[in-house]
Image 1 (spheres, helix red, strand yellow):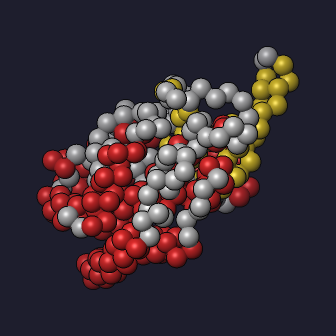
Image 2 (cartoon, helix red, strand yellow):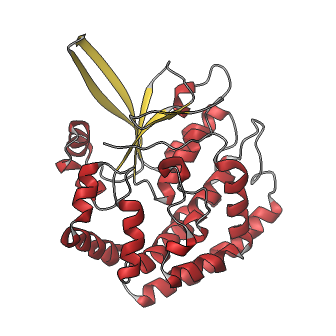
Length: 314
């Protein structure tokens, strides 16, 4: 089924029935990509399933700005922040509209899932396939995902080369104008960078600790992939299993597959030549690992099957 690319940030295959879903994201986050891919995998699902789950609107916030939702110019996000104190992404909501006439339509959001694992679990149920196991989820969520985030940010937050690389995907035209305006103000951007560094990078010793933890986790993942081939393969619906989607999504920042950013940006914004030199060395090294190869191959063969470029401007 061919997908459509609508100006309102909608991903989908022309499904107009059922509930309408909104996925709030940081567009380049690996956990947000996990949720996005899980929802894309529900496209063209079996008859009788919630077909609209694969047809959704993505509303993207830049890192740092995503935590300012109580100050957002978007009324629905301000209300969500006040009512639920939910400022993290991904966050999935169902839209409930009530019409008072052609001149007035109100919109309420009902929170459906508050992280990528909840989104992926719902997607697995819709596809009627085996969900991600607790062991794999624990390894990816507690070790691999945080380590990948720390390592990548240790490069992006280090110097002017890292700042320039961040500006490529933070100041891209696919991002809404008001967020680009905020992020283009260097003092604001520096404040965001400092906060991220304090929370996620901390020190060289902390980064090295995360690297060591990641190396051990990749060995365990390699063992799992080699001994559980049915788990990390193609499901009965012809799409990657939830386990394979999770593995590829969460490890993607380490190897920067060319297809990683295409579902949102429509192009590769993580081109190797645009990355800081030390980050480029890391990417090439991780691509040589068994898990890096699995990630690259999964993206190359399957990521764009049910995803076309779609911007989520607000």
